Structures are given as C-alpha cells and as structure tokens.
Length: 344
Image 1: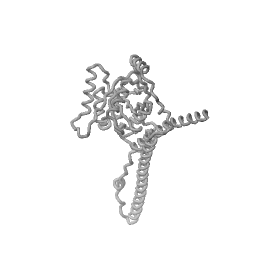
Image 2: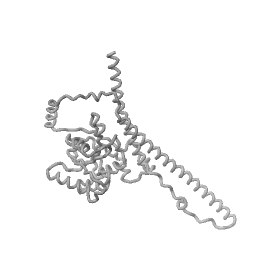
Image 3: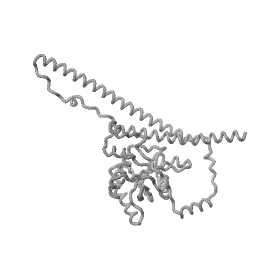
Image 4: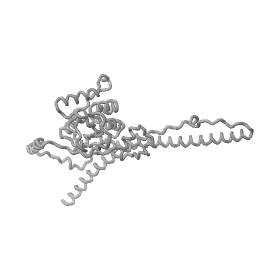
C-alpha cells in the first residue's frame, strides 16, 4: 500500500509512469471524478474493508488546464507482511501497462484511501502524499469515509499538501524553528480541492429510468431523534487525540526545562573559568586554554514538531465532524419541537 511503502514504492511507480513534473505553479483548482470511479472505491471498501481496516488504491486520469480529471482507478491488493516476494511497484506498473494496451487512461494522478471516523491525518498519509506530489505536482489523495456515507450522504474529499508544507518536507527539517520560519500550522498543512462528479448522458438516462422503476423506499430512519453511536465514537477518538497532544506538550516542556538547565550550567561553568583565569593572572600564570563549550555541553535536540501538528490537524477534523453531526441532530430536534407545538 502507499502508506506502508511510502516514498520508496510509491515514488518509483509514479516517476516511471509520468516522470518529474515541470517546475512552476500547477495548482489543481478542481477535481472531476467519473461516477464509475466513485462506485469502484465504494465497492473496494465493501469487499475488503472491515471496521477500521483501511483500503487504498491508485487514481488514473489526466490534467486539463487547472482541472484534474479522474477517469479510472484500481485497488492495491491486500497482503500480509509475510508476502515478501510481492512487489507493489511492479504490480502498479503492470496494471497501468495493461490499461494502456486497451486504450484506457493510464496516467498516475494520485491515490485514494478510506478512513475510520475521519482518522486520516497521519504521518503515513503525509509521507505518501509528499511522494506522489513531489513526482507529479497535480496529484491528489481522495479520502472516502464509509461511515458518514452510510448515514445517507456521500463523503468523498480531495486533499493536497500546501506549497509551504512541500518545501518543509523537501528540506526534511521539522524542528520548531523551521516550522515557525515557514509559518506552518495545522490549518495550512492540507488544502481541500473541490470535487465534481460527472457522468455521461447515457448513464444519467439510465439512472433516471432506474429511479422511475424502483419502488419508493421508506427513509423514516433519517428523521429519527435518537443519536447513534457515531457521536460517542467520535468523542472518544477526539479525547484520545487530546491525550496524545497533552503528552506531546509535556515532552516539549521537559525539553524547554532541560535547555534552561543546560544554559544555567554553561553560565556557571564560564563564570568559574573566568574567576580561575583571574586568579592565574594574579599569580603570573598563563590563562587556561580556550575550550569549545559545545563539546562539554552537547546541544539538546529539540523534539520534532510535525507529529504535534498532525495531532492538532486530526483534532480539528474530529471537531468539524462532531459539529456537522450535532448540527443535523439539533435541526431535527427543533423541527420535532415545532411540529409538536403546531399539533398541540
């Protein structure tokens, strides 16, 4: 999978498929997806995704001006770590070669991944998307949420890494100073690209015919005032991420205390040497030789802050999901209250 192989396998397959993107700003302002691709992604999760199991696959298509058109996709096969002989890069190349032979769009334009209650802001996704976007500048990652989709509305979003984050990832310097200099915060790590789902006229006619023939289904469950376990699960995941953030803050505060302590020790050491040199000078002796203080007090390595930004970004995603879910529930409660008052 893209997240397991990360830069090694993904970057090789992408680079072989299309080569390095031309320099310059080639930002994608819109993603157009064929309806068949959406159905393939949903079918892939229904067949292989169980619970929090993540499924992934490759997106194929072409770039037209500032619009990325996704016309096909194929899944990554499920295999265990014991399958040492399986070559994911070779598998991707063979699939794209086969599609080219039957005259189907075969250009690599990104990848897709399912998510579990919105838990997708991870280091694995960051590394994989950086590998794709570094090789093909227009590539995107599609995030499919099967749980929100099961509640009645399709949840499919496209993301890209912002140019600032791309520069930081290229330098591979995630220190607090580097992130502060690049003005990187959790709000500007990923950028969402608008999605448009497009079908051919024949498919639209077929859907219209099927809608006419199909029986009207009862969707009274959408008006249920009972809150499902979606809210409780989202709150539990949110609390887990808050705990991780708290632990990360404790680690950073410990680092700051150690730095302050080391600075005091350096100052005391320099004062002792200065006093000793004054005493040696009064006795007519030569001063002590100069020493590199950094060899005596080795600089402490600051903790990487990228993990903290990812945790903060994931907390923000959970908060947005909870906000949307509670807004729908509150709307139903106010509607029920109005109906009750009207009937009474």
